[in-house]
Image (tube, rainbow over all chains, first blue to last red; front, side, top):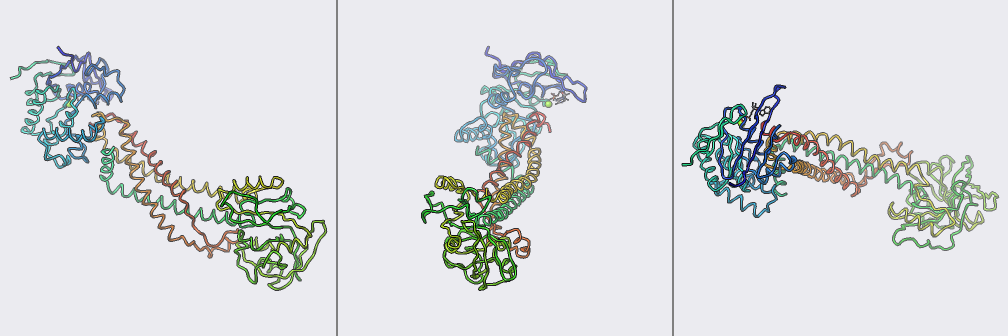
Length: 231
Length: 401
Ligand SMILES: Nc1ncnc2c1ncn2[C@@H]1O[C@H](COP(=O)(O)OP(=O)(O)O)[C@@H](O)[C@H]1O
Ligand SMILES: [Mg+2]
């Protein structure tokens, strides 16, 4: 088997809420292999986002170790973590989180600019990705002029444009109606079939149904971890 | 960089009202500082001008001992009619003079004065060359008449055409006495000069004192900065003589001159300090409004340093636009007062301290440039704190807002 993309070992994360400790994650072992499409499910407060954020290098565990693409995140400085997120990870957040003053195209280009991609290549790749996601006519619209579904597509475009090793999506469908959710999931499925590794945190059964592996969390622990037979 | 720049501009356009107000404030402050600078410089240059005009020149050559005991014994002879070689194009003019203490008497009054033997043709470098004369100016170095100040004439209760008696010590230590007719009376800025100086033709005075010598050689250069090179050139040319510049000869004015320089800075920092306070607050508001967005960008992998660059960029853009418009406004102000501000309403006091009654603003491009550069540097510094405020918030916490 190939090397895993994500390895979490004995990961715990405790938050202080008004000096009461809340165990968001306790002793979680979690491994993701290339090409997987994993959904993290569970009731609200079960630790889905916390796990996703730790895997994404946005939060650090109090205990345990996390490595992404063979790199131990615990050893990285904040600045190196940011670099890793920039080059190896793609994020899709619950709210579409686009930069409101930039057009769809510029939003996608912006991330590549941070990566130091040349302007010509930037424009080419951004146009190609948006085109592919059915947004060819929307390149120059600002987020405010796009529907929720379109904005989330731009966010996906931004996340995948630099071909990350892992795509992380936290409640990607939370602000979408069921038909746009379905479109988005078809898109994710297609990306996964092309080899993109995806981990999504969700409590939406429709999202779960698209995942090939369903990890269920409860009270900060993995309750069950099921491989789904792909149809 | 282009995208970052665009982003900054568009972000600035988000809150047009706040930023427009800030721009106006920057422009007003810059214009105010520049306008004040031109007036302060005007005052300073006026002071310099009167110090130099005051028979001092930029640099003066004298015999050893003359400063402490201004006497015909402390004199020297200028061998040729040619000024010793000084750097090309530097010297505007020079004058040799014989200046000694003397007593002047009219039928009614007696006064102690300084008697100055001059070659009138060379005195375009001093105040007397430009002074308003009632009667006649001296006609040449051998003119045996005197030119007295208006105030002195009033005190001596005499007038043009009448005679005065002068008593001065000759080179042999004996007093000479001679009657002089008044060729004219001069009007100077400040009655001090009018009371103190009596002018007479140089050769005529030398004849009276039975000497060929002079007591000073006054040199005027083109620009203030040339003062020091001129001084060292003259030192080399007259190794046995004392060579002093106006700052040494008139230390009080030199102090005032330095003080005016310092005032420019103090004023700048007062105005700009207040402005920076506003700028910092406004930038904090601007970044805090976008804390979520900036958090998202940082979550995606934008470095904290890039956040800083972005805030700095916005601040620089604001400052630059403000400074440019402020500078334009100050040029307009300058042109509208370039002919000088007439202070004659308050001139009574001004003339007393030797300042002319028309304040001529002076616009130095260095000053304008310095104000612009320092404002922009201030703008950069002002963006550090707001940037630090957002960077301090973890991306995750920012996203959750
Ligand atoms: N920054 C935080 N400060 C305090 N408590 C937090 C913080 N983030 C998460 N928690 C707590 O940790 C637990 C797990 O949260 P989270 O991972 O967001 O759950 P989920 O995404 O499954 O709804 C919850 O009880 C939540 O209140
Ligand atoms: Mg969550």
